[in-house]
Length: 68
Image (cartoon, rainbow, N blue to C red):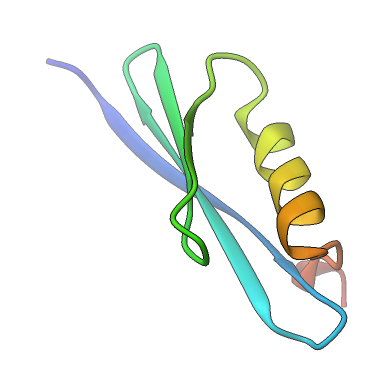
């Protein structure tokens, strides 16, 4: 049986809008997908870092809402 886990990376842009990228882990494979623009990518290594990079580059979303 293959185990599936999902996590998310969220950041806010300068206008306060929240952007979310989901990280889907199914066995050894990871897929990241952006809730805002529909962007998807396979990411075997460092999917959370790639999610943060997408949010910063595509949406200028760099503020972590969990940090205050």
